[in-house]
Image (cartoon, rainbow, N blue to C red):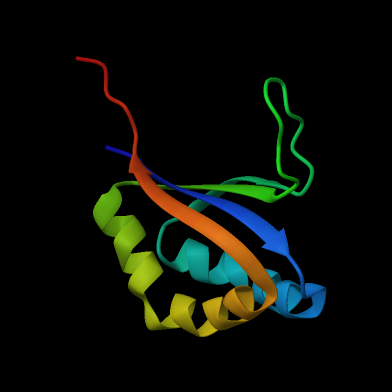
Length: 98
């Protein structure tokens, strides 16, 4: 079952975040991940949005997502994301109809 990583990102150090973003895709692809959404100004259609960037990633399954999250390659670049943003990240599994 597919797994998704959802991030809400408030960028406060653009230089650090840009360095992270520039290294991000090769590491994501190395672990079989796919970038589905990376929107700095998502359009609210109901309720109020807090202005954070929205990121949505897809993996074949939870194990693949966890391998990526815990990989030394990702952790090395994530230091810049952590230093340059306030981020909320969640891992969820897709829904399969019964």
